[in-house]
Every structure is written in C-alpha cells, then in structure tokens.
Image: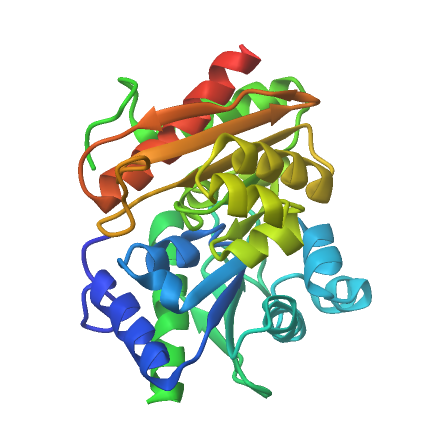
Length: 165
Length: 165
C-alpha cells in the first residue's frame, strides 16, 4: 500500500509518534486483533524505537483477548469482538499489562470473509488509551484485507499523534 | 523487500505453513523481539489464518520477555537477550501461554545500532517449538534493518515448515 490515509508516508507517522512520546517520556504498548502484529511492526521499523515501544499482545483469538487483556467474555458475547466495549477493554488491558502511558488497541473485520450487514468488512475499532483517557473511534475502511489492516494501524497512530500533540 | 530468502514469495510461505498446520490440526503462536510483530503480521496477512494462528507476545523490552514469557533474568544478564538460551525460553513461554502446538520465537540485532563484535547487526536467533521439541538456529543476515527483520520472519516460518513437513 503506497498511499497513506493521512498524507504522510508510513514510516514518517510511526517516527513522528515515537518522537512525540520520546520527548514527553511516554512509553507505548499495543493490543492487536485484526492487524495481527502490523502496528507493532510499523512502530519497530523505526531505529531506536526501543526507547519508547515496550511490547504488545497479538490477541487474534478471542480467548487471548480475555486471558491476556482482561476483556470480559460477556462483552464479546453481547457486543462481539469488533465493538467499542472490546476495543476499550483491550486498550485498558494493554496499558496495565505493560505498565505504559499509552496503549493502542485495534479490533476489526479485515475480510475477505467474516463481514455481516451490521459489521461489514472494513469496520475497525481503534482505541488509544493515554493514561486513564480512552478515545475509541469506529472507522469504516475500504479496499482489500491488506489495505484495511494498513489503514487501521495508520489510523491508530494518527489518532494517538493528534491526542498527544 | 521483493526477493525472498527461500525462493518463495512471502505470502506463499505464510500460507504454506498455515496450510500444513491446518491439515495437522496444529495451532500457532509467536514470541517476537526484534521483528516487533512482523511475523504475526505476515501470518495474519493470509485470509482464514484465524483457524490456525492464536496470537503472540511482542516482547520488545527485556522485562516483557521475563514477565510475559518466563525468560530468566539471569539468562538475559549472562547470555544477552540475543542468545540461544533466551530464544529457547521465549519459544517455551509462548507455547505455554497460548496453549499451542507450535510456537515461533525470534530475537536478534536488527540494527543499525546495537551491534557488537560478538553480536553484530544481523545476528538473529530463531526457535520453533513443536510440542516439546525445540529447534534453535542462529542466522547471520545482511542488509538493512528492514531486510534483517523480514529475513528473520521468513527464516522462522521456513524452518517450521521444514520441521513439520
């Protein structure tokens, strides 16, 4: 995916976010479902990311969301794994687990299967947790699986960048 | 990185490994240090990967290796985070944490900084754990940070593919 959602090239946005965190002495962790590690990979593409980036949980299976991030089974059953409730809990869980200032959580329907009328392919919830502040956002992305995943990671970094600036 | 270490295109190798695991009814998890999520991202690029791929830990900081994967602090102090002892412990830890058949662990020096005479940039340890069998391998990769990380993920998948075939 050459183009970017936000008019910046991909490495730049990761580097910009890391620089902001480095300046403010903030540590970052991630909790990723549909992106499967892509957000962590994007952040750690940048040399020196270990100053800021601590680690993450790839919570692909729902029971990993429950066991590793403290998402409630009831929320998954009631609202689905792609929901505001679950993305919030993922962000809170990652912030606690890694004892960081900033956690970025992503859960979505990357497709090509798994879409429904209510939750179509491309529906992604992202949620930065910055200290105790949670900022969940629903995005409806387009394109194929790769583009949806790329844009989800990009949107999570861009939202965190804006909230921290 | 267009070329591949093993003469297959990148998506194919992830798909091949997932197919082998699907056929054998094996579940996979990952434990990633220098690749920072790239291996998980590669595996989950493939539609339907959730049949096989459960999740992972991005253990970028050493204390995440200790707390989340049960790597011993003593091993990190004595042998360094990029060592056979640590990659073995990461693989064992991931297999237990996610209750999977196959865990793939990676730890290395992606550069451009951080290299030493003894452990130069490009030195990567990979270790598949297949049930109780551990198969650590040291690889010395070349190229820039992106290439080193890409090849590390590729080598881990390729080794697992061969061991499972």
